[in-house]
Image (cartoon, rainbow, N blue to C red):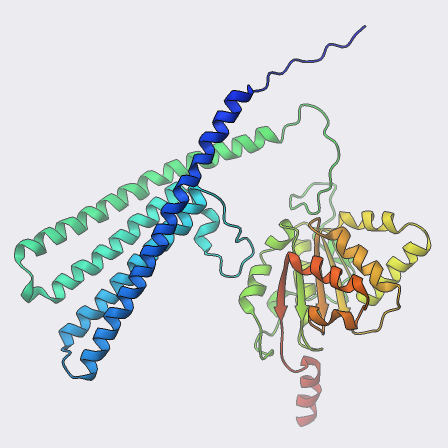
Length: 406
């Protein structure tokens, strides 16, 4: 008996083409944002022009206290308007035209990750209130040259801005909650399968189930040399250390984004401590982690290669969201080790995370591995990676020195 295939009606090509064409018209707004960039340049010129005039009058002794206060308020006013332009340019372009790929950038504005039209409108309203406050303060400072009529209407307009910002913020709350409920309902419906779905690779799962191992079991299975926590790291010891980067990595966003982390610095500066600390925190978040030194990983991969099951070994490592490769460059490697590490990095590329510690920057990894595979391995490792440089003296040598002095 012939099988009857279910009939599904796809949207007609003209309708789809028309929708895409209408959606593509959003790019007509791009020149508007470039125009705002030019306007910001005008405000930069105005700022330095006002600053230069203030400096000249102060140097020549022509600046009174009242004039200095008004000039500084003008400078603050220009800066606040420039901040308003930045919000409109970056936030508006991200919301209405096209996404800006800033994920993982250390200078990414915090508000940009959750910006939407409601948030943008509230921020614009609060910025306008701030600018109006500066203008009103200028009027009160220069009250002897401001008429009562202008002062009255300035106060009324400022209060109107405050009221409109409050109403807008109050209205955006229920709208944001409704959109979150709709998104959650859509996500719940999307996770209800109509038929058994094929098994896919999931590098990390933060949701706990009854059959999943506990946090202690994950920590023991990771093979850490010792249990180190990020909170226990002595951040005052290194001479140079990016604390903000480590704090950002502690949120484990790099695990969900399948990005890498590379700690580079002299021996004894805490690279392994930070790598283990991130691994322990990943275990606490429900991720599977494996730790080993570079020499141990080389021996494991070489054994799998000799047994003819290197591909199976790399696939088996996919169940771990984070692999930690410690002490890269501390011991020499054989000639056949570089291709093995290249295959490990290439297999994990954009699939799952690697945390690597090394005493040499990536530009000198040819000294460790040699051959053309070193450059290709570094290229894949650093493409989606957070590089943290730690400079300082060995922490291990400080303790016996202090004990000997006592």
